[in-house]
Length: 294
Image 1 (cartoon, rainbow, N blue to C red):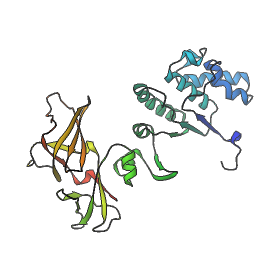
Image 2: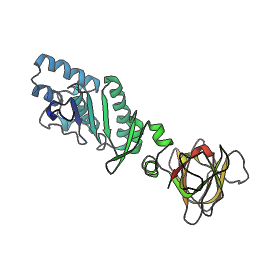
Image 3: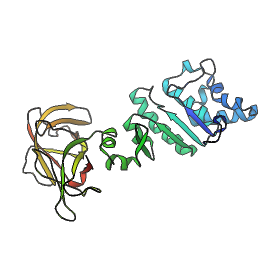
Image 4: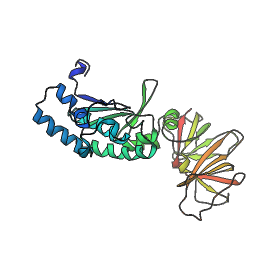
């Protein structure tokens, strides 16, 4: 597109705050781009009706934006972009103005619409859950540089750097050194903590300073340090416990300076819960940790 004038590029934009014309009806807002292109009126009616049906607003075509909810206005903005049949739709923080519950609903709805029309959507967002929920591919950027591109699962479970691990989701970190025991076994040693078994790190030589990264939901808690079943077990003490409906969130102090978060699903009402001050054992398997260059 570099040598194509902006007015001739088959690209449409959905703004963060919709940018709808307040004095025009829903129908005329969606039809505006077609009218500027001098599309015949008979075609405009059919294409606008089809676009509004796609976003489930066919019964509100005579309303003005002030008579719509935030989610409805967002769908009008999307219909206005899709009606021109672009090759690419750019979405600039499209759900940023919505409340949390509506935002979650619209994440799924936008993805369904994208699959229905078969057009490439490029969506910019600072919301981590939104990036994972809506995308087929994610590009994590920092200071104008792309650090990693991959599927949501690749980005979340195998981050290429500490920045990516911190930016996408919550993570626990501890600095140390990695050493090779044999062809399949590596050990990670952090100050004041017992040796930890880790999966083979990528392109790190024996003795390299590194960072161990663990997701809070991959960790398990036990009050019995002798309980078996995991590759690693580190003692700690509960600093804080927060009930979050679907899960318990714990902050656990392993050493004076190292505090990890552990998220435990509330599977049953009778599930064992820990209180601040209790001694616990944090457990996990080698495959659950990622070792990255420090």
